[in-house]
Image 1: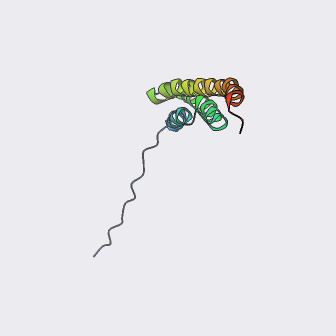
Image 2: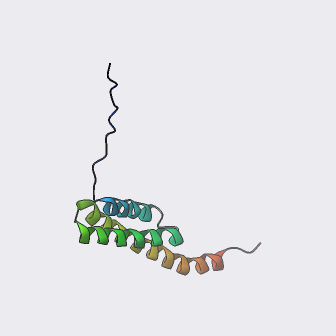
Image 3: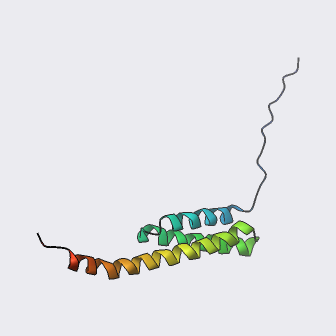
Length: 97
């Protein structure tokens, strides 16, 4: 009896990795926008990955990821500015014990 060789199924080679990574980083940058030192670098990195994907071979996820990264970056900056403005006001109005 002949032994049957188990065939290993290879995954198809896709060229969408940068766009998918940028999209995921865009989602994370919005979720972590309150943590400026985490969300903002994620947004910048995701934006770069999405732009590279768009130049290489455009896909919808990369386009959507670009938008998400811009929103995440803007939210991070807005939250940072609000914290800079509101923190001294809150500290000034705290009752002394």
